[in-house]
Length: 104
Image (cartoon, rainbow, N blue to C red; front, top):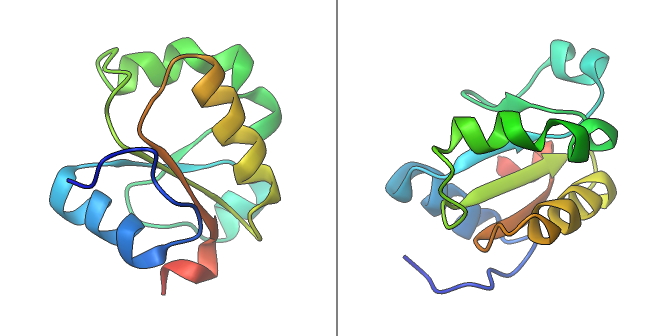
């Protein structure tokens, strides 16, 4: 696995982290955007709720703050905000995919 800090907006790295290293995909868009379509197996937590729902994320990753997390939104701005929140809460292996369409 590549060493952190991971570069942002690197779709090939994001895909490798998910497919080869079991990274958590975190969709931080609105509920309506998520319902309209999302990446397979993505956990949904809107960016503006992330700080209040960090315990939910902790439970999902088994409190492993070193688990790779790939954050995405529509264009990358909300994912950047979410990445900052995660880093503030001790997560060390976080990358901002950017927009959902960057996955393809």
